[in-house]
Length: 361
Image (cartoon, rainbow, N blue to C red; front, side):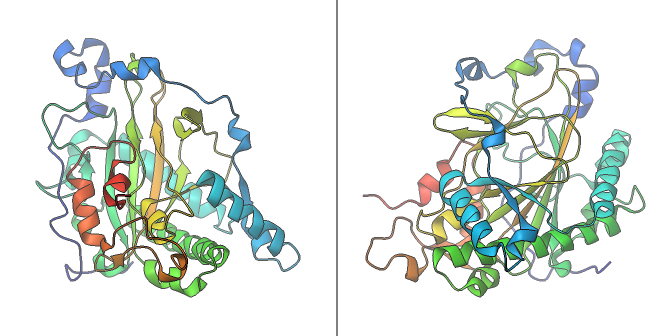
């Protein structure tokens, strides 16, 4: 596996205030002091509205049909519908070998089973996002998510900081290396086709996102008060495209649709794909990022891996000129680095970041 140096790695994006390890709290959850658990209790979710739809309504895109001249046009139309009407879809027959996915699952499960001291060997440093810990904790008063995470810059290889890549399990680094490369291939295929559906040169999207990829590996412990906490607060992703792998069989992902929360049931072997804020901006709102969240199970842990495909940090992000001809621009143009600095300086709060980028009428 290639290793790298600091050259080009994003700096000063903002870190997260250190809070207690949630997996450790969960191990003694029945004895948690009320003042600790209070920071995780969300009174507002008691009045949540749920969508009447079925998770089976979510579009399913068959990547093998997109690559087959006999079915390409039909499947491309399905992809266009998924991007315009949902912002979320599942991808099947993506071509990633099953053994790559299963090895990734196994290594992630093994990592989170390690003693806390071993996991802390790759803990985040003050003011840094990368490593083991939490994200988006910006004040001592805000409500906290019932989860831990491991965040890594995975592509291109020279941006990797192996100080945050676990040495155990021993295969972890090579496993992530192969997995992230396979995901980059799938993401670029989807990005090219999404651009084509917008009437944009497919290579333009691919060039914008190039090899830039980061990964958030999530651990959601069980909680005896699962109906009162959240694993991940409602938000949209401040990236181009996200590919999510469900590691365990426990469900927990929900999307905001038509004013209510719709549970997602991942198909076996599929990736759940969602459009991020960057593509909403580039497309001038023709494709929209979608708000989503993670809920907690009362008895079982849940694990997932979100791979984010981003522009490089110096890229200027704004509506593409070919998509504003004859209309107005709805979003301002700014560097992706400044966009991320704003994102990581705030707590997760629905689509507040994209609202910040929108131009006033």
